[in-house]
Length: 369
Image (cartoon, rainbow, N blue to C red):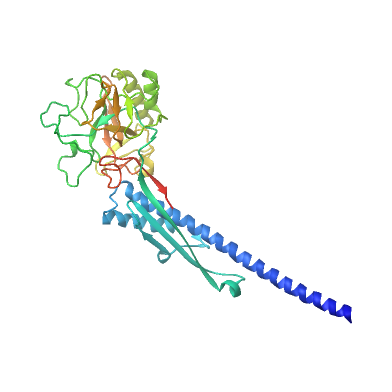
């Protein structure tokens, strides 16, 4: 009898342990499922936050219309991937603007549990959030072409040089009648001048300012014609920061300029400027943002403030901002390079409210939370 009672007790203990084990296994399966759903929600929130913040690369975050674009992009991209086998519907995605040029996306999904409803309830609401930001970059920027031009200004006395008191334009105001003296989308600008300012063949375009010996050519650490030419042809690894004094190359560098720029143009020879869209396009790289920005003819260069001009005996240029341009042409005799200012969706921004004080600013997208 004693042995039968022991067997009965062992059976009870076994059944109890088995029940507990099954319970833990059930909870473990459902908890693992909830973690999977949470991971999928986080992926959707991240994608939505970055997509929404991209609207602030070329738009004012205070502008209601720009925020509407950001909201639409955030919801669209947050609902592209599946969560628990189906995409999120609009009611499961919340978009907010917690700060300058920031987008917060909250993603939520209520899921049914498989085995542990008696422990955790029949359903569980899971959520994730992400905050994306279009943030200015001011230091250690690489991939810049070795040219440096000034902000445009009103040359009231017509001498082609900046004089104290003349108005400098660091943005593109709404409704500007004559955009030729502003960095507005499509404005034609001299990126590199190859001959002295008073040469009659110089085009009448912004950024003509030239002190003696300054031909807009920068020395990125590989001095001489070969290093300068290579910095045009390739993405330079030389880091450039706002406020940095970059050495100037001596001479006008006409030959290396023509050779380097010709390589860029030939790499996308079919590229043309679409005046209606104020954007470049080509058969090779297309007309959408992700395509035209990949063209070798779309370049970034440093900008300097003509009021500060050049320093240290005019042997260095102090960087004030960055700007993006599409290379339109190069003069095969003078080496003068002409470009068009591009709306900097991934290259910069015109007059950012929360970036440097006025002027184009290189921006990148990032997740801050």
